[in-house]
Image 1 (tube, each protein chain N blue to C red):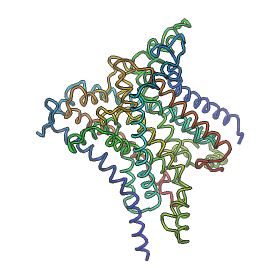
Image 2 (cartoon, each protein chain N blue to C red):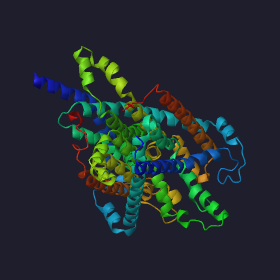
Image 3 (spheres, helix red, strand yellow):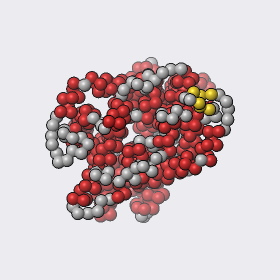
Length: 271
Length: 291
């Protein structure tokens, strides 16, 4: 590599822009963590530290229930979305049959419908057509639709260069379709599936606009945050967000170590 | 023999893709069709009545306020998308080209703020940008004028919206660049192309589909955005999405809300259609098998 002076300058300003973007994205997160340890969450200056919010959080069953609902909603919708996205992505990439562009368009269609519209339309559909009251299941399904589209995109991008002849070879040697999937396809596509799972989990875990219209009175973390706005955000919410971010940070460190040692490549190939 | 082989392919294709297609038809496209139907109905004291009429559309298209809100949302969404595009391209390029084995981590780190709820993040942004926010307080303490543009204005709402959706754009462009053969640029350079020309003739067209998807992923939620304007937009910053949401909350005028939803869908769909007219699936390498 190395390159000329101009190339190095380009690399430098692009890297600087990336760092600036990280700062922009993480400034509010940093502020939330800082505020979670402060006596006054609304205007925590000058700093005065306490862990009262964490003690309150540990004693409150409301937030535990909301957190549990959020995890349930996110897991359910992410599992469904990963399944549909992987199967759909494999079908579209592996079999060049007629009509696959149409199938592709159906899979990406939720991307082009705003969450707000998905929320209100499934509210109307459930209530007026099916006569169902708001519940976690319908919220999870509506979220899974959005997650499927995002997951499909990830699967497509990751597998577009995958050589499906590997699978055909396994079949020629007499492997059953299931065994072929487990022993040849799966080890190659799992990073894509993980990506699809992660993004659909993330979207559902923190979704407000779809869940808001579909849940009725059932609390999830985003709807509790929305509801508590009327009386000012509670410090417990900041503490909970800080804990979730702590967990994310730990996962990042683990990922970094795995990548550094080359133990897991997450689909990265040395070129 | 060949015919049977093709048949089996078609069957496998259907078996793999149909569950998802049916799921999406039932849970996305049919609900969207129901709002289309209800937009021609009438609501009275929180109940929907099936007398077909165009009243809802007449209200939206003749009362200036709705169109003003829509126009404002369109302008904001366009500016937010452009700003995101300008930032995302170099950032995604940097990660794809120089990220090495850590590039996945670098991308996931851009998405990780999504683990914190949107309300909390926007509230935190408010504390950073607002009139007594960190930036302005720091400016005042240092003896400068505070930046009025950040105080509950449309600019602040735009910054908030970009904050929420920019990671989608970076990810989309990154995913496209990961499948892009950077050696093509070396070839162009060896043959004497200047960097700018190589970008215009190679990088840009070959990554156009990923870019268009990124544009759509930012434009569509920005157009429907209802949360950041409420927090950061100030008293006259109401957006179309906010008013639309209200029809299903406090006012309970579902039919009018449905008509607004249909209009919002129609506008975003037209924009997407125009954008995708410029895309050729074949050139993007989608037909993959051939390379």
